[in-house]
Each structure stands twice: as structure tokens, then as C-alpha cells.
Image (cartoon, rainbow, N blue to C red; front, side, top):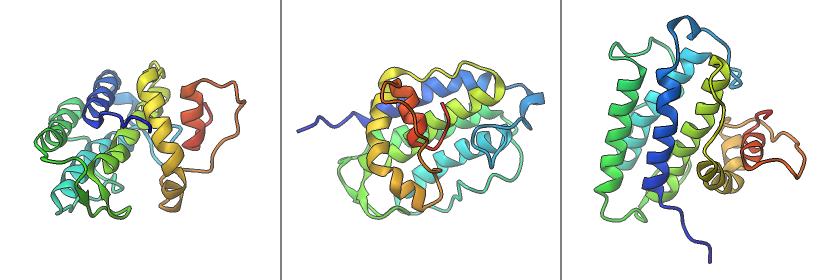
Length: 190
């Protein structure tokens, strides 16, 4: 039986990998394009901040945040501070949950909290790469995060495609790195 990943550690790792990228975005890059073709840098920043509210609301059972609505501006406190505030809220919920195996209602169907939180983790990891690529920063994904999220994405990619979250898988050589495989499954050309 495969060992389940520690989702709290994965979430913390994804957040820590995203912070330097958010902090490295210059104002004149907000309109730059990204590999997430529908959204520019500003849209992706707003989306990542909103996903934290979406995750909190879903875990609490009262979600009112549309993480796909990327209209508006980056919050006045800045991308990093807004993201940290949101991710700290998610972490508080995860750390104070009596049972991460508790089944909750999500837009993707009923599932344990630990399975649901993999969606926001994947979102952070993939969009970290998108933002880095769009702003000329390091596109390296931590190998441990890439491996854990690749495993999760292999089982959830088709569901993600049904919801319009991921494009069709990109074909790459079998010898590709774990990061390249993760990106390809998410519909991105590594």
C-alpha cells in the first residue's frame, strides 16, 4: 500500500516555493502572457490568492469564492502578503482539523479533506511554473513537490480536464524528468 503524502507539509512546501516568484514579479510584468494561455501574470496572481479563499470556504462548507473570476487588481497589500494571509488561513484549517480523512462536499464531488487539498497544492505548483515562465524567473519545481503532485495529477487530470482546469496532455519522451512529466500531464509544454 502506497504511503499517503503529508498534505500539510506539501501545502507548506508549495507555498514556500511560490513566495519568491510572487515577490519577484515587477509591476511592468503584470500584463505579460503566461503558459496558462487564458490568463496573464496579474490574472494568475489574483487566481492564486482567490484559491486560498476557495480552499478555506470549501473546507468549512460555505465557499462563496469564485477562484476563476480573475477580474480586478492585485490587492493593495501586495501579492505576497495577500497570498501569505490566505495560505495561513488554509494551513490553520488543515492543522486544526480533527480528521483530514473527513469527507467534505467539493465542486469536484465528495472527498476527504486530504484529497481535496491536493487541488490547491497542484494549483500552486503548476501556476508557480506559469508565473516564473511569464516573468523570466527560475522555472525549477522542487523535485519532491513535482513527484507528489505528479502522482496526484495522474489520477485527477481527467477530472480536471472535464472541469476545464487542464488542457490535453502533451506528449513527451518517457525519459523526461518528473517536472516535465508533471507539466505535460497538466497540458503544458515543458
